[in-house]
Picture 1 (cartoon, rainbow, N blue to C red):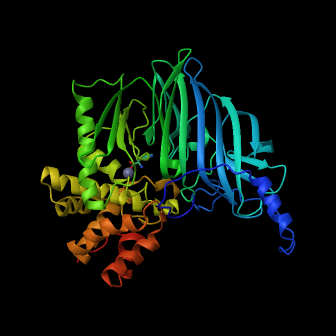
Picture 2: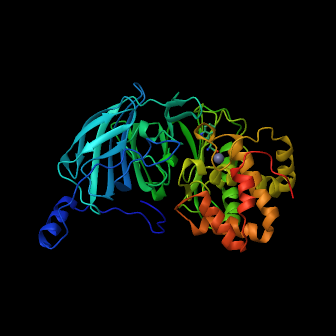
Picture 3: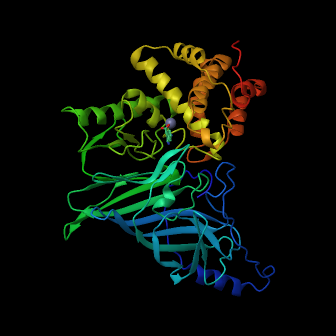
Length: 472
Ligand code: TRP
Ligand code: ZN
């Protein structure tokens, strides 16, 4: 699913091979016979050249997965609905680690496949796929998924925990437990149907469906009906205390705290209510909340960071403090980072700059610390002005360079264009690009159009050039 899609995702299985064949037969005047060629093995991100693939566009993932805590193994079938964007002879999915594939079909017929390099699953369907045709890929697999441990980017993917597992997939990681077009440029809707031993709980993105128990196994279903980038997909399996509520705006709000986490009585309620308040307040600044439910998961996962997983962030209990600031950051990402995803990872300041700015606004609103004062302290304390905010390099995408200097650039912009225009940007930018992918270039053009000003030299100084910008 590429670009802006304001509608609800839905999928209808069409017998595409058949209908494509009939269409071709019925139009003898059609152009020359198709030349089927392989889809690209990467989506073209300069920092992560192998991530994602070319030649098709996914609209839905249906992940059915059973987890076996005694062995930490999974067995799963992931079914993907996609549309060919070229005449395809073969195509890749991203899939990595030691999982073994037992069956792979395209449009219901067994298809040939090989695994190449660290993360390419190369699939050759029995017949070429015509550009514009939809097709269904179904992959069955099993094994013990392995987390990714990147020296610069930390732990991600499927992470085993004491009583289950948590999957956190930014920027790489989704491919550790499902075959995927792992790029922010191909968003899709998701259904995750997860079976675990009775007594364990499963949480994921979006809305819960019916839950059934047979033979001491409970199956949970979660659905994300809005376009979601794979890096924002999430699963949490384990013992959790779940709290359900609604925000003042009527949005379902599901929060959960890992049972092994030492909390004071009433913490579940506080976590749920603070989440609701932050979402309500941010909606007043950034426009309507983009998803159909909200919430959060406090988990003992040990990765040392919180993550803005779509509709329901995950907070690792090892992060220093799960407080209102952190909630404002991760929930702010629902507009900046989730509904709007960066076209390239170099643009990640469009996520982290705004999420950090959300913390600054939160402190102004709820702790009486003016944003300008936070800015002044950050500006005075910052020691490292090397690198470019809007092109930090692969190993620095989670660096202060992106977070603090990104938020500083926004406060400098506020001073430059004035409060009125700035707060219009905060609402109109996420509204105009709802569910889309965005670049820094588009942001600059958006602000220039809104203000009617040439801000080229301003943005060069704050986003592209190393060095401490002078204040005006
Ligand atoms: N993007 C996350 C956030 O800002 C943080 C994060 C994800 C992170 N992966 C990381 C931070 C790896 C450090 C290292 O909410
Ligand atoms: Zn963030």
